[in-house]
Length: 182
Image 1 (tube, rainbow, N blue to C red):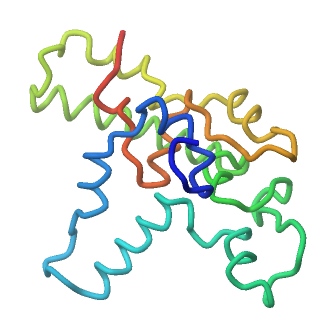
Image 2 (cartoon, rainbow, N blue to C red; image 1 turned 90 degrees about the vertical axis):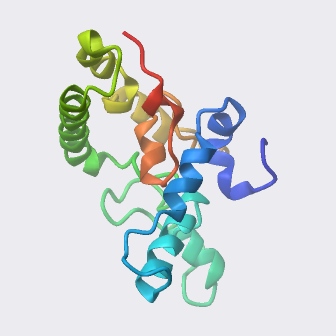
């Protein structure tokens, strides 16, 4: 394992292969959207980002680990799909959310294209649509997601590298955001 933290085993491959931009991730986690340097609102926002980025957000398995007297032994399934275990790795893989995720990916893909064209922030403006449209950042690949979900029960679920947008759900900034090819 790339890091000595079992909570991050589902993104070990992304860590090992440098798929996460740690500088931008740090900037994002520390970003203050409030108008004060400290507040309970800011603390809650940053706490949520840290829990999600370290795969310690309170999903079924984390609640069971932290509160064994409150949660029964055994597997706690996702409340949305009822098929898979409710884990941080399952976030983004749940088949119930695919339509909404696909809609969001399309929306943000177009917003990025429009922003880059309007601001002339790329020297590659002539092929920017091609580059963005071919980026895995904005493509939902059901077969890849199903393959990740259907790992055998003895191995932990792995976040597929072919779906870098899943990292964003965990407040991790993928290198693919500034590295797209046509």
